Length: 68
Image 1: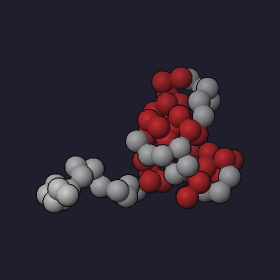
Image 2: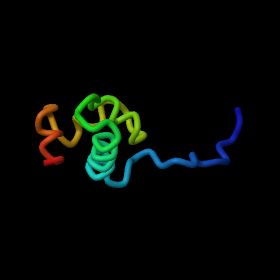
Image 3: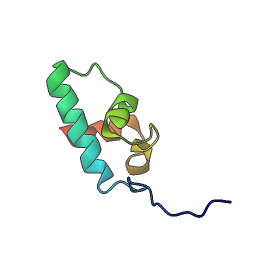
């Protein structure tokens, strides 16, 4: 068995998930000029799992409220 000598270069937990998702969504909104993207795509571009947004907001609608 190999000893564990290296730690992952990327931390397991995201620093500020809500802010990262909102910032990414705002950037995508500006790029697309509209709402032609999904929450799953926002999560992917933010570098988190597709289910991560549900940890801060249980419904899709409540996730988008932060963008108003």
